[in-house]
Length: 112
Image (cartoon, rainbow, N blue to C red; front, side, top):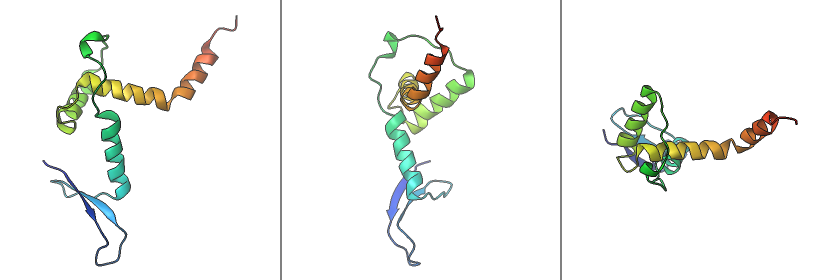
C-alpha cells in the first residue's frame, strides 16, 4: 500500500490549510500529525554510524524483534538495519531522559 502526503490549501469552506495523508485506508491527518511522522522518520529511520558486527549482542523478546523487523523493512524501506533502528531508539531515549537517569544514578550511589 503506497502512502502519499499532499499539502492542501484553503478549501471551498474556508477551513485552514492542512496536510492530508492518503493511504489505502483513506485516513486524513492534520499538519501536526504529518510533522510527527516526519520527525519519527528523521529521528529513528536514519542510517547508523556503526557496523553491527563490531558491537555487542543483546537479546530481545520475539514480538519486539518481529515488530522492529516490520518497521525496518516496511516503513524504513530496507534503508536501515535492525541494529541501526535499535541504536537510534536508544540514543533518543538516553537524550530525552538524561536528567532522570543522572538523578537516579546519584540517588543510587552508596553514601560511604
